[in-house]
Amino acid sequence: MDVIKHLEWRYATKKFDKTNKLSASKLMVLKEAFNLTATSFGLQTINMLVVESADLRKLLLPHTYNQPQIVDASHLLVICIKETIEDDDVNDYFDNIKDVRNTSETILNPYRQNLIKTMKKMTQKEQQQWSLNQAYIALGNLMTVCAIEQIDSCPMEGFVPEKYDEVLNLKEKGLKSVLLLPVGYRAKDDMFADFKKVRKKVKETVFEL
Amino acid sequence: MDVIKHLEWRYATKKFDKTNKLSASKLMVLKEAFNLTATSFGLQTINMLVVESADLRKLLLPHTYNQPQIVDASHLLVICIKETIEDDDVNDYFDNIKDVRNTSETILNPYRQNLIKTMKKMTQKEQQQWSLNQAYIALGNLMTVCAIEQIDSCPMEGFVPEKYDEVLNLKEKGLKSVLLLPVGYRAKDDMFADFKKVRKKVKETVFEL
Image 1: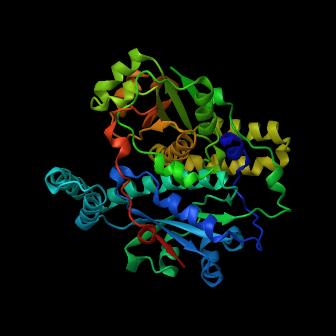
Image 2: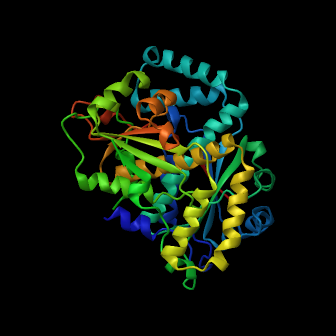
């Protein structure tokens, strides 16, 4: 597989084919890929919503500056961060390591206590910024996975997170929406699909030492 | 190709095979993949250094809390952001669109002026935070591309950026180092390679609506 050809095929799709839906198995790839995103310390303080409901997406449209791709795409992915990182988030993580790897608490405990301390030292704003970084890693991962699977996508920062949080009841889940990725298939008549990709030359962005 | 298998194969490799170097063609894939990273507005305010020099990496080691993967890996990728975004960065971008797509200035000019204004409205700190987001997208993209190409990698935030900037003369290039990704091949005796991956269940991180 030529991964570069796939990355060149990718573009921020604004016009989706409304009738062409992702199969359950394609969706499963995206869900598993999100869950496999590398996160700092492995703590996974991010979540993803897969919004298929047409009604919900209609409600979200005005809070997305009426950009039609969020309703026309097969599904709308909403990447979220945890509002705060609690001791239990760290404890659940280490309990999971214990279960999966059968590591003893004697070995894990110093790491556990240390990570609880590290998280406590951060203000809520710092925790959110830290989780936001992981959300961008997930976005980069997902866009590349989409390209490989020949799924179209459109990364979006242009929306009103507070309104999304309201419509999607995120506050009660302790989450905040931070990034969008509508996914599906490009419309056959999307003229942008054939536009040449605009990029700097590799030698302008990459330096060897 | 089963992309999920590749993502499951990936882990943050701490112990690299010092004798196993990436081929020129594999390196080229990483360089092109970096350059193809989706960035906000397509502005590409990030750069990547590919550090092969053993001498330079030895100098960087104490500024990386002596984590040996930065010297043992085949190459050390250093992702950087621009210190400030100038009018010329925006102008170069639109000139590039004009060249590549043959779009007229009449069509492009309002977008050009608008983006110059948008960038001017940001403080330098906001510009850097904005570019940092793109750096994390690039990191997510690169880790996935590495996994697909069966290249090992280790995402790292734990280093002293100011010291890296000094050693690598980044100030004179107008750049700041923000993220590291040593790349190469795992050591055959790295016991962590066989550790089971620790992840939450997909149903704990992904919700359908």
